[in-house]
Length: 81
Image (cartoon, rainbow, N blue to C red; front, side, top):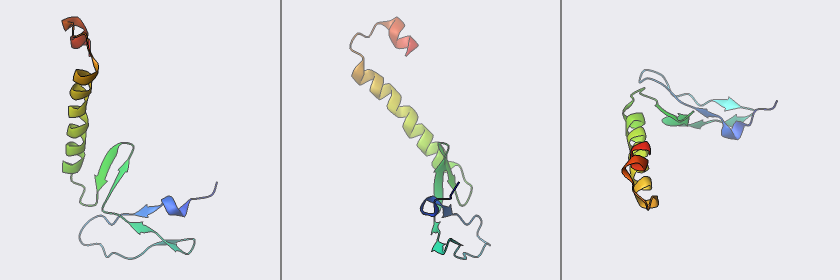
């Protein structure tokens, strides 16, 4: 299987690391400060604040979607949702 170098990225973790450029197949890899993988947001300082904010935003969308799409709001149905 071939590696798609355009999808490869490098993240420098920690402040003491020197930011050297990395190459694969004579192509410089893109440097990122945060990356989303398996629906988890990972940042270069390994703090979870961005992940918590992202999860909270996603969770707050669901009641709004339910409120806008459900016409018949019987208490039993709303409790299940």
